[in-house]
Amino acid sequence: MGRFSTLWDASRAFVGMPAGGKKAEPPKGESGSDADDWYTEMITDLQGGGPDVNPELTGSLKFDVYDEMRKTDPTIKSILLFQELPVRAASWGLNPREEDPLAKAIRDAVNWNFGVEDEDDGFLDLSWDELLAQGLNERVFGSMLEEIVWSKELVEWRDADGDPHLVRPIERVAPRYPRSIRTIKRERGKIVRIEQWNSGTSPIQGEHKISHLIAEREGARWDGVSMLRPAWGAWRLKKGLMIASGIGWDRFATGHPVVWHPDTPDGEQKGKEIGEAVRTHEKAYTRFALAAGETKDTSQWGLEIMNAAQTLADPVPLLRWFSGQEAEAGLAHFSQLGNTETGSRAVAEVQIDPFFLAIQALANYHRRERRRQLFRAFVTVNFGKEASDRYTPKLTVSRIQAHSLSTIVGAITDLSPLGFQLTTRDVQDDVRELLGFSKLPNDLDARGIDRERLRQILASAGLDEAQLAAIVNQLPEDVGVARNRNGRVPAEGEPLVGGGKTKT
Image 1 (cartoon, rainbow, N blue to C red):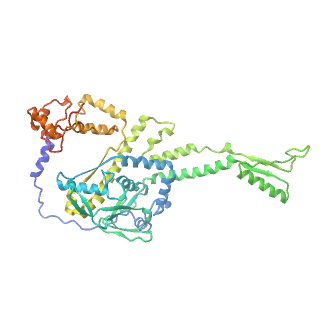
Image 2 (image 1 turned 60 degrees about the vertical axis):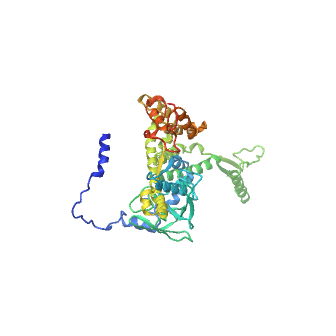
Image 3 (image 1 turned 60 degrees about the horizontal axis):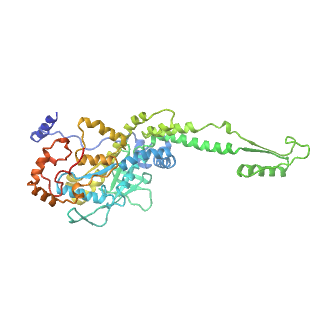
């Protein structure tokens, strides 16, 4: 199958596409609407957000609710962190689109502006990590709008050879939170104009000015659907239960004072003072003097603390259940197994797989949209549309899932009998990174042997680089020596023996 695929790919260049005679002309333009009804479109345009089955979450009202949810509920906060941290902690890279000097130079220029790989660099006011965190707000609000702010002045950027170039970088990817949006104008499904409620602002419009991230797209709605929307019902009931429980415990734990007193104005006033003191002051006490031969029952004064704490329902089981419902809304129900009566580690491992599939999809979405909306804009403005289409670098993301040391070691042990050997430097460095170790040092550099010194050693042995490469490439696979790539003689700056001697 592999050979057939290779032959098929190679034969594509010789296949002529059918002419088809006179080409049919399809109808132009749009005739329908993306909205499911007129109400949806009206609410979306006039109230800063689309409608919802619940009036409390219709229009811009929902943004304040979602903001309260993430800031007041620890379960909601942990769900958001469960999704955010793997994306931010992943390995992000920037690769040239093609293997030619111009593609590599454009890749370096993009990295200089955004600081994807060089965390200390980057022309933006935000680091790449902070930019990721800002964009991930789309999970909270359903969408996240940003204004692309270009530098007013041209800035000098130097390529890898040190040659200067004047470019116009993006200096800010400024957040424009959904609650501030008044109106949105769209053309062919794309946002082309934004107006905010905030005073002193101007409409945001123009090409390469708007970045729009959306959590769950519904037709032409720009606001999307928040990840927190399915958790809202449980959160609302949980909030009400916590408030009611707090009131109940406050009332019945302190007790309810009952004072009986003489039926006189002076007795009534003193009785009120006694009741308020007992209710509001933890050190208050009341003393009633009894005449000789008198009892509490025959006294004109008396006090009782009515305590109903034994009848107060325990709210903890319901609160746990509500928290579990919130976790399910974020595919993080495995995180609740330690708080439930049932569940095991094996169950958690099964449940965590779809969760990390969702995280991978989330990271891929941000990878694609950051490249499409930010990187392409930068390359188009500075190097032209043709260069943008051909050379905009590829943004990569990997190592999403957290790895267990025992799991990695077990996998290597199981694969070893099947021929999987850590014989190349790149593979060893990848595994060392998974284990939290630093990369292997260059053996030649560590011993102070430079390229010219190695040439002298080879010459004294009557060998040249090509002969050495041929010898190494004929060694058995399991000898523990990394061979040269493709059997070619390394270029200047590359290791002579493809990374030196490595052990399996």
